[in-house]
Length: 146
Image (tube, rainbow, N blue to C red; front, side, top):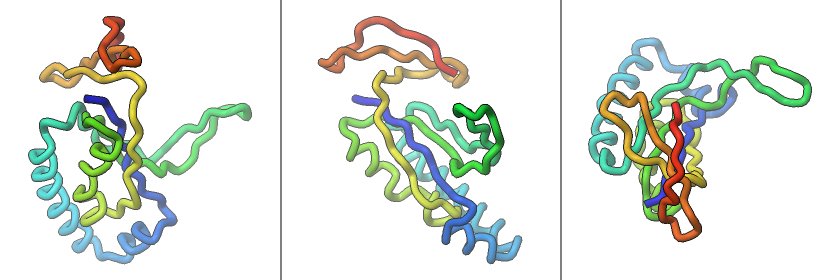
């Protein structure tokens, strides 16, 4: 199976985010609670496909380019790594994700990794990346991430 990175997007100026901001604090909390319960069910449903549930990201981003380093508002909300037989199969994993139903998410972008992620320890603190040859078989070269 191949490895894929899923990035959950939510732009501050999106329709979904604008609708979320119109909700009362109580309605937002209710949606969050329902969303967290739904997320637990989704995670259980795909537990054999989730390599690493990276979880939420901070709302501040540093951009680095030829002008230097500066702060920008983040459009990323969370990330995860999954395994699937194809890019389409990986994308289909996220069709019923609560990012859309309960949270103000705009979209989830799914991209295939050039290197395949292997299993993680139970403490989620170490992962190994195995370089794949053109036949998708590991070459044996590995490095740690995280």
